[in-house]
Amino acid sequence: METKKILILSNHFITLYNFRRELISRLIERGHKVYISMPDDERNVFFVRQGCVLIHTGMSRRGMNPVQDLSLLRQYKRIMRHVRPDIILSYTVKPNIYGTMASNGLHLRQVCNITGTGATFLKENFLAGTVRMLYRHSIKKAYKVFFQNTGDRDYFVEHGMVRDNWDMLPGSGVNLEQHRFTELPGDGSVGFIYIGRIMAVKGVQQFLDCAKAIRPKHPETRFYMAGFIEEERFRPIVDEYVKAGYVEYLGFRDDIDSWIEKCQCTVLPSLGGEGVPNVLIESAAGGRVCIASRINGSADAVDDGVTGYLYTPGRTDELVACVEKFLSLSHEQRAAMGLAGRRKVEKEFDRKIVIDKYIREVEQ
Image (cartoon, rainbow, N blue to C red; front, side, top):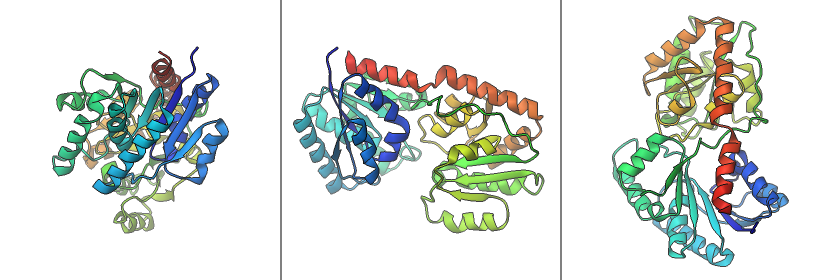
């Protein structure tokens, strides 16, 4: 087998570590040379120890600053001319857009992964139009574009941001050995957990208001929130709900799996822009029931009425109704839904499916 030089473009250590480290390990095991371009982070040493070559690349992960983005494009061109990779793998918006602008001009093969669109296309405004234009001038000419859900794919096709160069992946997949099935707690307390950045587009206000509606009627329930406060305006709001006894704020947790195990249900009230939410498929892998808004990605991860419940995004009343429905179930019924979730993930979202697809792209 011919060994290849592979360049990975990433915007952050933690996402590469959480969702791509098994792929990187597999590529190295098969004798390929892996180069990783991403911002400086003391934790990057993990990939150096694996045998990767790290190329520190400064970038602003969010916002659109023409000067900074032009600098990123120039950095990518310089890196690609130096490495001369056989294939480039990229994740998230800026590595996808500016990576393909660079690789297209150098006639290099790049595989992009649309891991979600965030809030970019939820409103029709200048930002949405600009990003669509950038996609048309970048990934439309890429060798391959992976989508994680059919809704994103259809939107990109409809707006001419890709041609026939797309394919599908089951999200980032789940490491089924790391996220093991555990029995649903049945000690009388019923835990609901939100995991994610604390920001409006994630539906945080709907989760808070749901907790406020449920807790007085069902004192046996607990509502937990785990994640960074991304939008500062939510800090006093979360504090208010914590003081009132409606929610418990855990902050960012390195031990999040243990908190999922303490709960019976994971809630993701996102308003849109997800790929396939890892929090849902990882929770389902552990045998937890999931309640989520009916958006692209979440609707792929949750079978309504079988592995959890779906509701209209932004409708707190429907979210409350889903929680009430879950609370009306017996422990045996909840456990059966959790087991159905585990089986769904094993069949559809095993990370080995994702890794095998990437290996085929690299080695063909």
